Image (cartoon, rainbow, N blue to C red):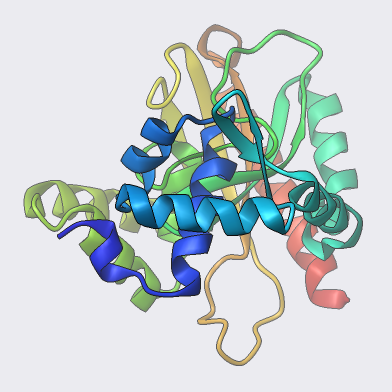
Length: 251
């Protein structure tokens, strides 16, 4: 079953916007067809509508988010309570450790970086503000999955591991251990030579929220620089996530 058969109406527009947002650079029609699974005629209709409204721009046959998308991004930066509540604590953690710190959320089976405090040291890492990676591997993804509401996690794992129950069972066992420990750790799972630790952030539960974590705080460092101080970095990251949770729950 292709993606088009499972989405209708406005969802097709959102599918195109999501593909453009997560790709990180301008896309050709071929790129968008592969990413969305839409028929070419359907894709052209969605792109034409999005261009007319300013959500998509075109240059020499390549498509990217347009100026209205930028306005949405700027509005998010200004008004996001989660980012605002996290930024000072993230800065303190980055300065104390001299490492990069990200605020990470889960959206549509992806891990998205909402905010990143860069280390003064160089670090080749997939995460940067606004970029997304699959919700599957790495400390950030596993932290988000481990502390996700039970129903949401089960549905997510079913989509991702429908054809591999053994892999799902192994990951579920790892997620149980992470939940007991309070944080997730990975080494070279997403980027070779990058070590990471991720701890959950919780906001005050609201009706319909499901009780899962709102986000995770992730500290990233070269494996060589993290060696020998893994527990210290984990402890600092957990304390930072807890401080942000307290602030969110008091507002």
